[in-house]
Amino acid sequence: MADPDPNDDTSADYEQFEKELLAQDRDAARVDTADIDDTMARSLVDDLVDADLVTPVPEDSVLVHEPSGTAFNSTMQLAVFHRGWTAGRDADEEAE
Image (spheres, rainbow, N blue to C red):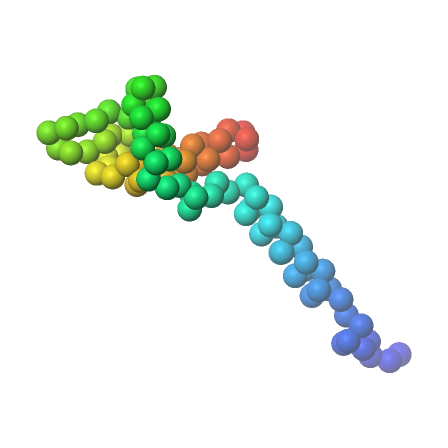
């Protein structure tokens, strides 16, 4: 019996294709936080303050994200964190 031609073996191609599809699925499920500008960050933080999800602490110059207990000194940091935190929480709920 002749040895199989290594050039005819497509198993590695199939595995690579599956890896690429899985990576695309993960990318599609992720929330893009790079598109937040200062105006959007301020607006989101204002909405979070109104919803009692963020507490400003003027004497310490920080904003406290109440659900996580994390403090931030920047509206941009808080906005990016909250988007990621929300996406992670939503992903956990979908997995259950």
